[in-house]
Amino acid sequence: MTPGLLYPKAKAKKRKKLHKASILQDKDHTCYLCILLDGNHKLHRQLHEHHIFGGPNRIHSEENGLKVYLCPDHHLTGKLAVHNCKETMELLHKIGQREFEKTHSREEFMEIFGRNYLDD
Image (spheres, rainbow, N blue to C red):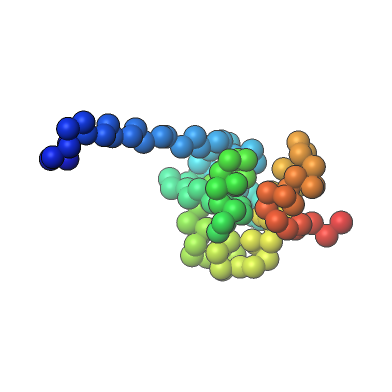
């Protein structure tokens, strides 16, 4: 309450963001890239949520479920980590676009994300 105001403003309630589940993977303690690149279904204690399209498109990735769960080695620290290896990031971009286009058109993808990641 602000002193001096006869009718103080009511505080706005904070809206909770809806976190849509990944359309690529269930959160089952397995790393998406461990399975994809190594065929390793090892369970991990810790997984990082990685939005496939980052930067200004991160919010669109969240809205459309375009995210995967990665072990720290494939997310940040390893040689093939998505944040260290351009080829790994491009692979996830292509997979994400293909999955999005199963239920939407390429034009919708281009309108939302501003770029085509597929060569075909």
